[in-house]
Image (cartoon, rainbow, N blue to C red; front, side, top):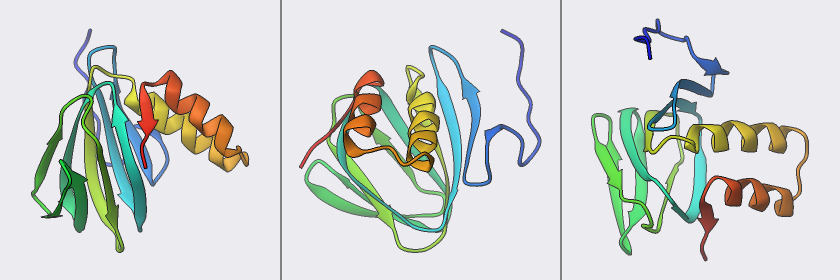
Length: 133
């Protein structure tokens, strides 16, 4: 594989979600999101969050954590977690092995096309993601 060098704003996606790297081993996605509330779920991959701007609230191991800009979160494969933020946040999500970046892109496209909950669950299952109550 050749080196990948991207200028600010470059990547595959849009202003809100931009995939920077997508390989079998590693996925890197940059998010610029006004607000979000992601329910608890489990992935079949390790997931890292690095908060670049803003403040995010993470749930993991039955506890809540407020993470400011510069904060780092590691979620091991199989760990229940979720997050939210009520104002603009800019952050990176890194997954190993890769694939989670494809899940984000496919889910975004399906939602834009009015996908029903069952369709979104099927997409999640393909990428090793399970929602938990």
